[in-house]
Length: 322
Image 1 (cartoon, rainbow, N blue to C red):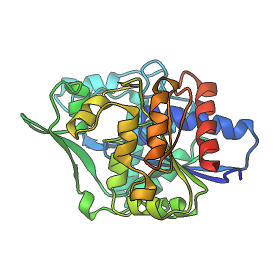
Image 2: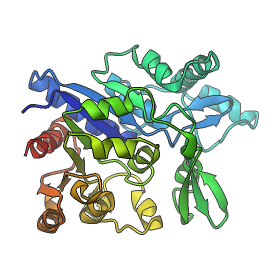
Image 3: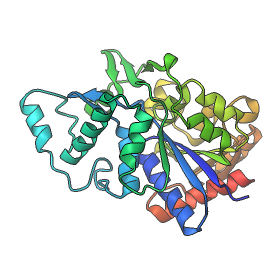
Image 4: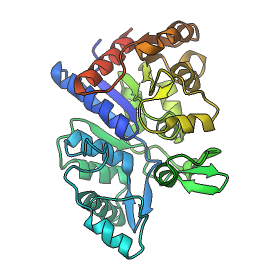
């Protein structure tokens, strides 16, 4: 059975690369598959009076083909005159530079939010500008921001990630407002109707973990008839991108492909996963994971380009069909 409805839970830069490869696979095979991406919103913040949504924007820009591939985030061909002016006035975070085109997106988003539109409607309105080839949904319309508990106090995740480069040890993570949040319209319905659900190789703690923390989403994954397959963001004991190892250490999970799979847990034992892909480097983890109730397979997991990433996505769909 070729899946017609694919749902992906994803973070920002890594998630965007994976979804772009999945889209390339669908287009290459002339499949009628529809892709829905549920994006992490825990990195969102108010800055200089603007609502900034880093992961949603990384996904939108990458799928639109206007992202900066060199930096890995933001728009290509950016200038930063507005950020320089804000810094001169002492407004915002001088270490969190926004490009002028990017600021245009934030102004548009903030204006629509101020008009009373929920974030999900704003995302639909903004992403309609480009033929993304996917349906992009925020995990929630509520403001659920991830904060990091440190010995020096609580920091917004972006401050801990960008300003301190995760050098300040994290003692824990708090999603402010998560208790009263609900999944954005369409999220639970998409999961329930899916033929397959994929967990992108995104940060298991502050990207996928934050999505799973929204009331109702974890339950939707457990209840769906679709197989749930994840891809490891760790290869050979090292994170593929970013500083997810610092996040994993904070919650007591080893930076290891099999350890992350066990963190998610086998759906047959009350967890989330039916299947899990590890890199060929971590092939020794396959048999123990299978014994734990998670169908596992070792394949190349380096997202070097769209072709390599499409092959990863194909392997995930093949594992789901099994």
